[in-house]
Length: 144
Image 1 (cartoon, helix red, strand yellow):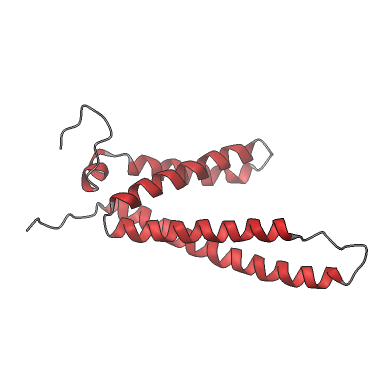
Image 2: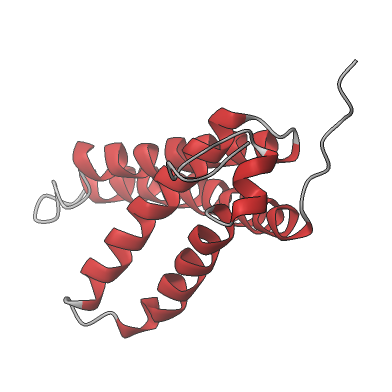
């Protein structure tokens, strides 16, 4: 029987941060969805405001909630030391980093904190002890 691998403390912190952010994202998305539905019902009675809140806004909020649920699953997978959770975390954090950098060009300078968090999380995920824990060999020169 193979001994149980121990999750590095830095990865545990990443998993907790990702878990908390994804829970807040799901809650915020559901609140926004509920408020959007209320606003859609309210504005549908006003002839000059019809169409302000439409199907695409609701679809974007549902996509946001779905992505946060997926990120929640990845954080649970990190606690269980699953290889797919490492890949999923790296992909979602890289996408978040790209979107945050892109939002800087629209004048959203508060997103600099998000960029810092994304970079730190990606740095932790690419550390050799983290990759070794998840059974990954990224660089050709690494040995198992």
